[in-house]
Length: 337
Ligand code: GLY
Image (cartoon, rainbow, N blue to C red; front, side, top):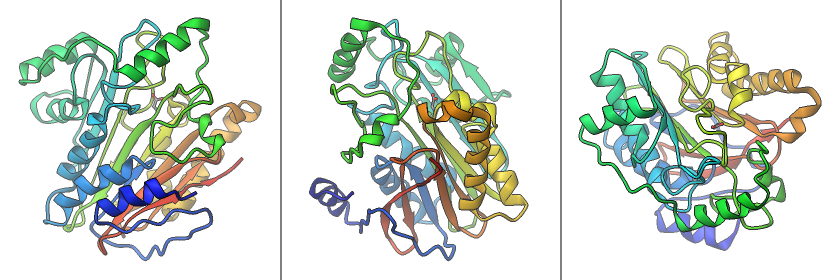
């Protein structure tokens, strides 16, 4: 679906935009390239592209790109997002570069840009993963500022709505079945939204790959719950000899199948990105069986030739692709069920 609002939004970026079912992109392989999950990725890609088109490093591009989404209030990423069931927003993020360096944070509270903290973990510690209070302390030691502990207006409204039943229902992104096309947050019929993530992978002009992933995780999750997004190999994986993949959707199930790593390994065996993503989503379907209808999961990938592809479990997933010919396009992911 393509609407006037989205067209205007993308035109204002000075970029071309195409979005309708069945559109098959030309996928000759190109660099630089940046792709990201969901339609919020169009705006994130634009920031990443500014770095890539100036011969910048993919790592800088994927960090800068997802910071745009972390900044968007009323989005399901960053501090404006839905809280856990105790009313606190907790954030997860990870980043990985062309040298297999990686950094992650999870269960991080009151810090605006978890992706930047993840990069600092990668660059300024001997570790890969910091969580909770320790991650926050580390962020403060690196000069990050503690933001107020308060919910955005929309998140507060959503939380109050959720509290009426306080039903623990880990459903992710199936709201998209309603074919809502407004940019994230996609919403349930009652106006609340559940969850989203932005995952971004890029190849720079030098042919190097990097990736990033950031999320507030599942709305109204159990306190302490962490999904796939900050887990290297599940939410994100980069192998500079082969390709990169990043996931979105039901984190528990993406972890179960080591989603992003599995896609990269299939690309190593020679499968093109879309085929590799499809095989991994098929694996998820096999693992979940009947229960697959209750969840959404999607993976996007780029290989070393700059070819890209994606696959999702259910309809409703889209992803944003920005390539060297200055096109920033929105594509519908192909779905299994
Ligand atoms: N995929 C994001 C999450 O499950 O938290």
